Figure (spheres, rainbow, N blue to C red):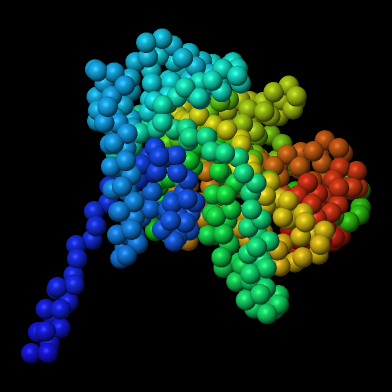
Length: 494
């Protein structure tokens, strides 16, 4: 009988898990009440990145699920109360779908490009087709500020379009939050780790490196307060960004250089292997698409948009002394490349560079409105902490910061280590920007009369000649370190 009693007690205590609205609506509910992830996280006793994960498809369990459901139900009820009386008799009291398009009574500046738009998406004037979003003149700052003040609060979203539809949800602006000073989360984490391990530098460093991903997400969340766009999300992805197998890769080519010059330098002497500092940290400043990627065709490129492009690359006739910007690609024909690679090839086709090649031909694109400022405050916080750690000879903080930005980039795509941010397109773009930055350093050395002997990955550049006339030695992000010095006849480095 005891076993049956235990079963009866178990069934009596069993409860059906609380219902949660679709992931697409959770963030919209929070934003509609002008609440940050940090505020909700504090109320629920979790981290901001955990809230980000819940808003992009991951579900909590147990007591946390009950608490989160209570918050979301309360948010829905509060919004229903606020919208119970329509502003106009003909207005619909129901909350509109997030992707509903409404014609505007008069054209207003598009929130992405500033050109007149005749439709409203999610309460904001926007162009419905990417080809229309190419106007060269941005809105005047005062007009843009006035427009932001007059926009209605964002409403809860309906489920996004299915992947079969080419038109994807457009990025939405966040409610402006008061600007506050970013807390020194890095210094706090280092001090806590040192206290926990009684000053053991090795143990503290190991713990900080294990926490690098969630800590980086918390720092990102802190630096994004007051930002216009909420960036943690899992928008629909085109098939080319999906891995073909568990251990396979997607179709995007990152153009990673792996190049070695075959002939010796013109004059005998040593070759210096230079290490480019903070390659991924610098690459965080790149053109990133803000919203879900939209499909287009044709040999057209807008500087106001960014994404991935199917191109026929130009012929490269300079391989004996400069690596191909596409890296060591052996397959002929069209290839999917990222925004930095495309822009580099377009740049090299101008008179400023010779030109060194013909312009690439674009066949298809997946793009969205873009900005270079998405991770700027995050990058500056990491850079400042890195520079201070170097000045203070604080190796614990230095290794911690390095782990934060390198792991942040590497886990931004399809990774089990970072469920809060899933943007493989951003991961490819940032990596490619690091490769582009390295290639441009090689070209700078070449045009200064130095002999480029090797270009590898994101941070390795081998030079024959007086490299100090071109680069500054040091540990700063804009400087280089000497990794090795070897004779030109030493084939072990080839």
